Picture (tube, rainbow, N blue to C red):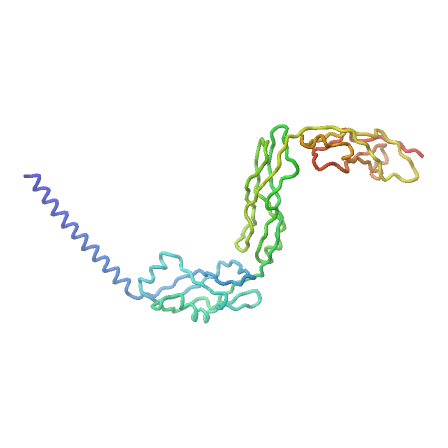
Length: 320
């Protein structure tokens, strides 16, 4: 019986507490509604939302393009400005006029047009500043080549066949003439790969210029590719030719053939021969105090790399 009595007393107390809380909540809600139903005057800073900007023009970003507006309206309508950042639309098709490289937006235009963006029960008391200037420039479209930035090592006996390449190999940039004309190339982020022994096909980002809010790029990523082959080293004996010898003298030189070492893919190795190379000594480049000619590689096949002459100079004598 004693326990039952304690439970009944506790239940009554809880009911009284619940009724008290209910009345307290009701009073709070009534107070809030009473406050929000009244009219208040306040000033807010509105960000500019640019709409219907002509396609051949671009409005340059300007952090000062804001309107400070004083409004009078009911508290309920003020709530939306506290839950989201105030913005106001500026229609560039009929609310601005152009002077030189500026679009001009005035208070008189604002009073006529901005009332449509506020509800009937909202009254505009003041708009500041009187005038907004939006700098603009004519759009320029330019095709920019893309270059690669690599740090790649290969497994022993493997190398890249030809060059690294990207797809697409260029990007179209659209933006203000002053900004676009200074961009002459784009480079990829560094591609770091190690112990490579198969073809490369990976996506890589472009390193775009800083402060690109006014610029539009046709792509911000490219496919980075390379054909990887098994490579081997080979050697060939290639004849040497002396050029630019004066007509009134004759030159005798030795050796007339130089061994050339090269590095190429197994795929092309059998097709490489001495006729694919050209080694010359330019008589105009001789050192008058030495009887030496210095051979240079003037031609080599596209499919070979790391071409090296096993002899760095050639002796000669002049015969009169």
